[in-house]
Length: 93
Image 1 (cartoon, rainbow, N blue to C red):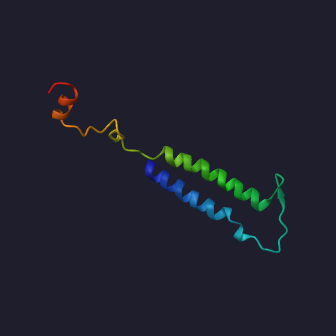
Image 2: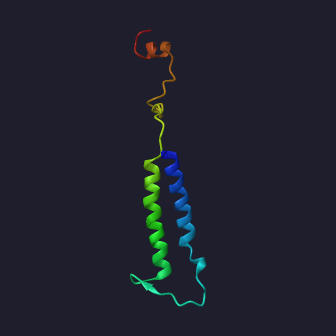
């Protein structure tokens, strides 16, 4: 069920991206104003906000597998000396 809802959300995100592009407007049309912006800009911004909300919902529905933490990295995690070298350095020759 969760995977179906997530798939529908992802399809809706794709549709919103297509809708946000003002390709449907005639170049001769005078843009109207909406919230102080040209209407095509307001539609695009509304689509992008909706995409952000739907994307966050899709991530909430995504099952992330639990993984073991990665091994430590860096010089503190590496021990290239043998037990014999450590005994000599420690004064136990």
